[in-house]
Image 1 (spheres, rainbow, N blue to C red):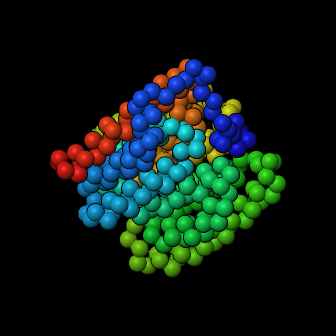
Image 2 (tube, rainbow, N blue to C red):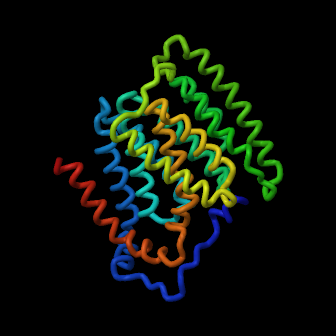
Image 3 (cartoon, rainbow, N blue to C red):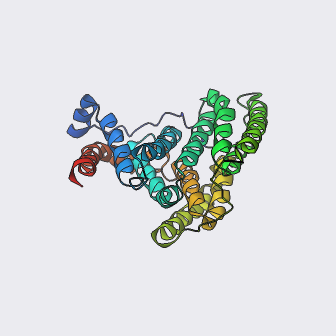
Length: 299
């Protein structure tokens, strides 16, 4: 990606960095897989546990898996990425649970997965857009927000890949037509609508305000180095979020993409602190595994 120094750039650790015993042991045991599985288990059993069926909770959790695949090439660090996933899930929980918005949330997560892949040399993901947005439109009037999120990526110049932005524009146009047809067909029986707004309250409102403030600070400090869609989507969804708790859930994803590209880029945007977070993630894995076991067996 041109604007942010390339998410696929190699991160070189300091010459004196040495893996400690926990990292050596963790690599042998593949603890990163155990750790991330535990992260999704905790989210499944806490943030979305109050949905009517476990399958509903699983669909909402799959949305965070899509988000993870959109973040991981920027953070390159499991502990930082996990923190962002937990924040996104906390922001999403009220709107997704109370509004039974698990399918639209998963569809928006698929939009994040496709478009961040587009920026990160996984450009074939954009061919899924007509299916993703068509499905989104069939289940929710919120599909227009998914289309807006996707269209923001047209603002990003891609001179290193001639013709790719024109190809994206064509796919966005096709996706809009497919989605409009799906929305018209499904409109007679679809129950979901954003015409009735439910603003965030209580802890959800406080968390939104906190993350919005952090996002504004990141926009101000990193503005010149940010990709255009990361600016546009953080601002757009940040401004819309106070009107409805379901949009807060979408803002959670957009803001976590922003944070992963700024203060949590390559784990943390500090050469001095990065070795510390790298060590810390190997201690994080057994801790989050224990937390997952508690949510499953101890509650």
